[in-house]
Image (cartoon, rainbow, N blue to C red; front, side):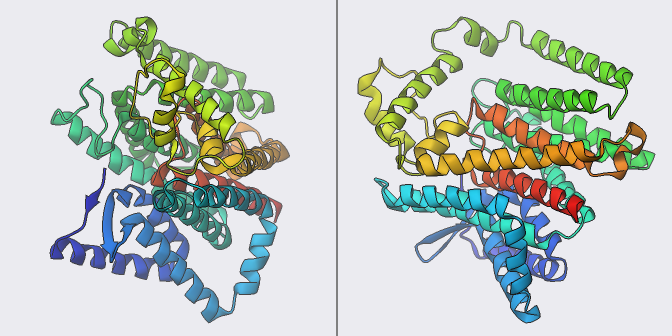
Length: 439
């Protein structure tokens, strides 16, 4: 869903907003990058410069890049920037491999124009954003503020979503999608914000801020519930369970606290299951031969055949729908015909960036977890001192990444402008947190 900026008033409002953004970014560049995260949903607003379509999100990233270059030139800091990139080669080398795979797959695409647009918006610009983030972050305080802006973005989206729910603007099956095309996308946008917010519970906050944080988390959870996205719920529980397992193994918090949290999660899980007993969605999932699960199985079978036939170069970004329809002749009639993505993050990377891009994706993930786990095992503080180290930050980033991958088994949790930006931001912050701990 896109809204095209056409009227003079809309254009003037955009100019005013960009002027404020430029001032903030020039004075505090890391805050400018945080604002881009906050404004990630603005990719739904599009403007045409000649025949070139640009979203507001893209304009923000490109403006930040221009300011970054001007600041580097004026301060003659390019040598330091190159040194920063060299130090973080474990991130940008696999990222470069992903870009290379996506670029080659784009060149071989049946629709180069459509694939090039996706390459620009979902790969190149988020990668540029992540590399600027790596260069500009100097301390943990800046990382906290960027995470705070990410969480704030989720809060605004959740508040708007509640407005949609209040006025009864739901999907045909009673789920909340807000201004997104699907409830799953709303869930994929909000879940990382919720998991990132858990980091702030380890901060020494005043009671007023603790109450505010509690309200924020309740708001996010309520809207996540209203999406009825089972895959998102599963991803969140998997992320929280993984964090609890690590806390227990590392003895960072007491066994009593671990047990208490586990009991709470079990109660929440049972409550969610109970709330869905008798619902049309759960009944279809368990009993119908045309359920979303059966549909996914068919999509995956088709995707695997497409992949085997195009195993090295892939089919090009955004081309899955066309190939999916062309391959229908090899299968019984599809249960679902409009399938822009193969409903799996790994299949999506393989099919749309080729084998090279998939290898880069796995390399990036492995490096991320290897470095974050090294940081977590480095100090192993007691619970009383946990907030003094970077362990809560690393745990929050790890939880978000686990969520993206677990939910990504059942959906394409990277393949949108905002989702790609969030994924690469979490990856970059994870690398930076480890780098700061080593310095």
